[in-house]
Amino acid sequence: MYRLVDGKGRARLAVVTGGAGGIGAATCRRLAEAGAAVLVTDVQTAAGESLAAELRSAGHPAWYHDLDVGSEDAWRRVRQAGLSLHGRASILVNNAGIDVVRDMAGTSLADWDRLFRVNSTGMFLGMKEFADDLHEEAVETGQLSSVVNMSSICGLIGVAFQVAYCATKGSVRLMSKAAALEYAALGKKIRVNSIHPGTVDTAFAAQCLKELGEVGFAPSPEEARAAIARAHPIGHMADPYEIADAIVFLASDASRFLTGSELTPDGGYTAQ
Ligand SMILES: NC(=O)c1ccc[n+]([C@@H]2O[C@H](COP(=O)([O-])OP(=O)(O)OC[C@H]3O[C@@H](n4cnc5c(N)ncnc54)[C@H](O)[C@@H]3O)[C@@H](O)[C@H]2O)c1
Image (cartoon, rainbow, N blue to C red):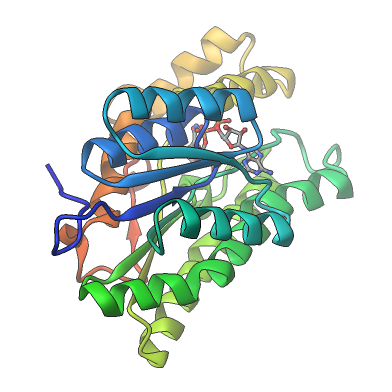
């Protein structure tokens, strides 16, 4: 079990975007169990508040704050909230993401822009807003801060009917590497890594499977689900906690020599 505390035993502050559901919620639970103070952020206020209350009732320091990741002003408010609730962040998990499964002809410019705003611009804004705090906290504690950017297997390989999504997730991969190198060049004590899960059993995946059925990939969501499970050599889709555990590793000092790298918890999907 990794310990997300500083040298004085004080909880490190982790900010998680898209934290109210799916992989984000599993990540908030795992970060809290590892000793972090967790600032859950999302656009789903009720679900986010409920998760923060659940974590507090289990004895963990945790709060919820609204954050639409595409809004620079909202990022500023979240940073201020974190500073007054706990102090400077040392972990940023840029997890929020959306998808559209559609052929290219049917993908509108509005779809394209919407996906880039959340999946790519949101991560750029988050790193910009928190860079100084992440660095200063690391200087004070002597522990490198960590940014984990959520990409996908779709950021490593092309997937049919996901042109816009693959474009956004590919951008996350190289944005993360460029940021990691820039921070290193500037002497900023911040590691940046991207994570590339295979299909994870969340509401997001259920919607993708439904849309795959609609574009003719499989006659029914059940058959699309079975085909997707078979496509992962390990034999099943991931449980969100299988990804959350990998994120906690990247957040923790156990991965302290990793920066600009890619972690690929994909059940062997991209090894084929
Ligand atoms: N589920 C998968 O198969 C899978 C695979 C690889 C990568 N991913 C990525 O993992 C991340 C989480 O996916 P998930 O499966 O948990 O999805 P999910 O839909 O269950 O959760 C995504 C969360 O992001 C939030 N969100 C949406 N728009 C937002 C915005 N503008 N600002 C802030 N939050 C916003 C949603 O409210 C939701 O709580 C995404 O980036 C996704 O692309 C998912």
